[in-house]
Length: 436
Image 1 (cartoon, rainbow, N blue to C red):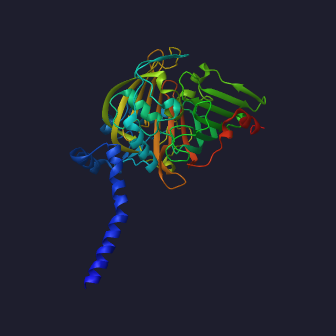
Image 2: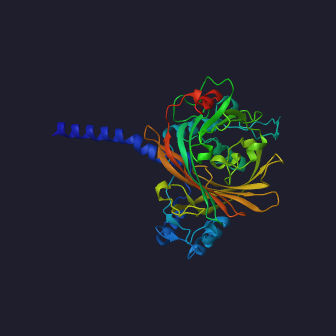
Image 3: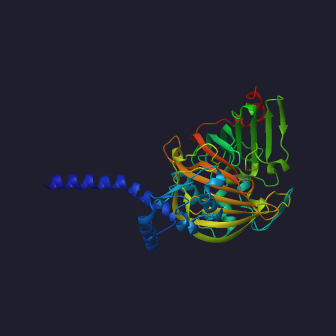
């Protein structure tokens, strides 16, 4: 009997030991990255979801959730015919906490206690990086994960956004249309892209940086245009550096002329191939964090896409905005963003930032006349890297021209994360050779 009891006790202890890491890991993310709702506040959200979860929202009932949406999107759902369809709709889904992979959480624990902003400012070709704006160690690749997991300012939130590396090495393909709502005309796009981060790496070896980096590269992307067919074979290469004093290098292999040209800094304000976004709008924002000033305005409950199934995004021909978005109630931090360069095409932007992932589900951009010009609706979702770990990423997005009634519904397909990539891909020689 005593032997049986001893064996049972031993088995029980072994089971507890095996389960302990799982139990700790399930609680650990919420300690590092606080959830949107806890306690009585979460109970109120669950009560609200009893009415709304699973419900389709369109022009007939969108007024009832108006306070949970940015005004531009509310107006679009309210008047779908202006945007090329008889019905623009989304579905409300229950709130879920956004998990992060183990490497990202470990990076937050390791580096965030050391995160500091440089008390000294410095000048750049586009303006000045003021005191307490630049993240110390960023230029040397000594930061990773959210530097400010519990941010207090708009600038700290922006640095968190910059830390999202989506698996460090990745590839995907933009698949979508440029739509003119007035005529119903569409221009199809299919553009495979490879992206690699040299610093801030959290889940793909080497971590946290690639040591052989004499140029101080932060990240690079290589894109090939398959469609539209008139631009078939055109290759883009963009390289961003850790030092904000160095502008992005952007090179284009123009298939028609079989030549490489370097894009000027001012051209990054231009629209991408007739779409409703500039080169600086890629991935919600593509540029040095210190190019802007940030003013945190408020935190509010909103409906945003955070666990989107990309296959559920649907549209009819001539429709400039996806339907079928899965929006959940969450905490959104609203930040006013102003470019330090007076030559920027936007007078200001509003970033609506998700407080668990620090991605940007919505963005609004005003023109130099003070009119709301462009708007972004980003569908965030979850994929897995090659090791089966969760990766938060953009699975779809819409950019719209609110003045011209123009839109670009896009999906990111063929996504793979944590893959092996050679640095040689991100060279001028490579995009020239593969452009033939």
